[in-house]
Length: 140
Image (cartoon, rainbow, N blue to C red):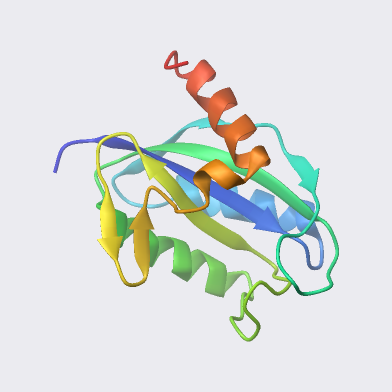
């Protein structure tokens, strides 16, 4: 499969948020046939959704990858589980949340995987982080 660039959002609002993001970055670097090529600034944001919870630390990473969106999702869910992520409450607090925001070339439209992410345009912090990554990559 040809290489593509995937943009992955990282978020954490439970426990040591900085360490959860740092561990996620290390885990992303270890995904086979994938390499980190740019990282955005980490920023703190208010939680989204109806559940009362603390603020998130968020960041976005650009990955050059040979993985399809489905293969990458499998890897991201593994990393979330290793960080203690549970999916008990929708929109609830989490140790780590990893979302595929978009790929440069590929798309997906499945029940549990939509790329580009349907919320891409609605989250200001994702737009800022994506713009920062695209500028770093000379794609602004």
